[in-house]
Image 1 (cartoon, helix red, strand yellow):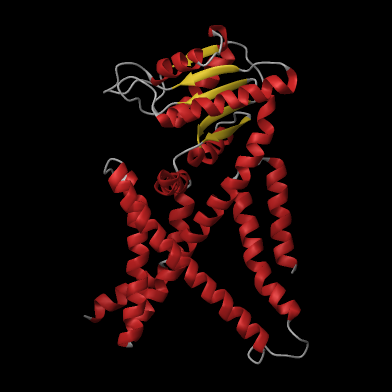
Image 2 (spheres, rainbow, N blue to C red; image 1 turned 90 degrees about the horizontal axis):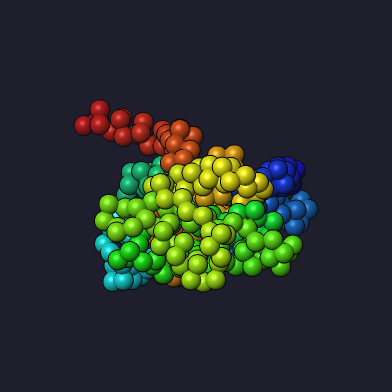
Length: 342
């Protein structure tokens, strides 16, 4: 049990130091994963070997069955969700991610079943060699998903001391805010109310978002108009209308705050699926503060969450390419050997 304890303690240290790190979730998930076999070893009757333990056998079989069931349920859920996205959203690559992931999982499961039924040892070997890189991505995604839920609670708890609230923009519809932006604005207003209740001080509301090529005005202008309509005084609303990306939203808004001599932590409000990555960007840019998410339609979250996870992998591209390359090395070596044998 020493290794899981060390991993968990390291996660606590990272969490206390800065809650905006994915590393914390990775450490805690690794600790949890290693706790299971360690706990099984502790409850095993004394003097009973691993191979001869009926308790261990039943526990391992139950865990394996539960994992397989979870994979099947997740596969079906992603496919059904992907079909829902096809019906309700534009057919862009980003909106097809849940369907593509579900179909890829289904293809792997079908290949495993076919290999077993055909008793094809070589096919099974290839499928087994695929497991390490697949496992790496699955582990990283699980850590990202679970820790983002933990972080959401932490960010909301710490939002009451915000000196400014930055509402991150998204695309407009006919020059007006969409339901997605509306929820980001509402999240910002909830943070504002929380600050007012905490110490009677209203944070500056920064509407951040540039103007797209097909938009009649900037996202910031539309959001600022909506904030005023919802009761925020004009002198408590600022506009940042140059940004094109989330990183620019945060950097340009921070420049605006410094120019106005607004000091203290900020809270960036965005969509719930985007909040943790926004928080990671805040940390990378050295900006003190948190990110809070507004409500998003349930059917929209899976594809959006997968998209954000891909962006997180891209942000640490060198590390992830190296790890995937090392884990896929046996597969690559096998492929080269097979080619030269032809």
